[in-house]
Amino acid sequence: MVVRILLAAFTSLVAGVCYGAGLLRVMSGLLVGFGMLAAFFFGILFLLPPNDPTVTFSVAGPGESWPFFLIGVGLVPVIVWLLVKRGRPATEEPLEVKHWQQFGFGLLIYLCSIFLPVLFWFPSDEMRRTLQAGTIELMVLTGVCVFLAGTAVALLLLYRASKGTSPEKPDLMRRLVLVVFSVAHLDKVPVLVTYLLIYSEQPGQVYPRIAALALAGYFLIAWFLGRICLDARSSA
Image (cartoon, rainbow, N blue to C red; front, top):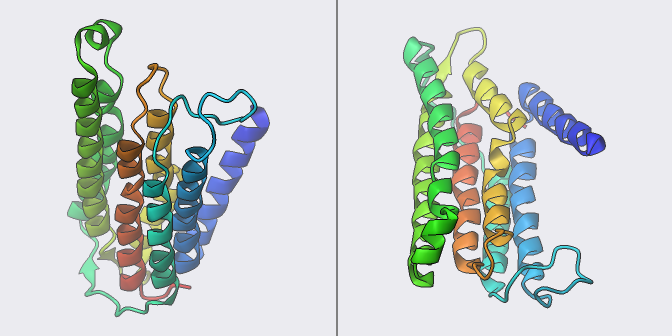
């Protein structure tokens, strides 16, 4: 456990250093690439027999794998776009209080979009016994929609916060936003949500399509990272 924590801390530190050094495109491509690999990984899991004790990450029930493979394939051109596309530097906005406010509210909304949907994803035992399976599935879907909507709003605020510049360091806020975003592992939240939905402790309640919809949040993250890279004055 200690080794895993140290590895996670080290990888987050490396990502932050890379963003701070100006390697915006390369690091963004790697972060989205992690989402692509996760999509293929989850897709392979649903090709394996469910509830198989010989499989390390065996899922609790059968499900479709194609939504995960579709997301993985869809992220490939996005990664290429991140690495190849060259944009024009955005119009400079002098760094003001509003940029810090957008930065703070963006982080707050992002955290709320993670924790509030838990009420829909994991209802109490009493509620689970009284509700029908279709109703529980609808609740899980509602939670994922809340998660995606909150993520979209949060990323929009963080993107606007990244527009704050100073004459000496025009990419100051862009690098700061990306450093915090990567060091806090906020880019990996869709994978975390997908994992929780697939490996829920609630028996017989595995919804692969809804879990894949949560993983599709990587397209929002890719847009966010791509827009900042295109606006940057200097990025590699």
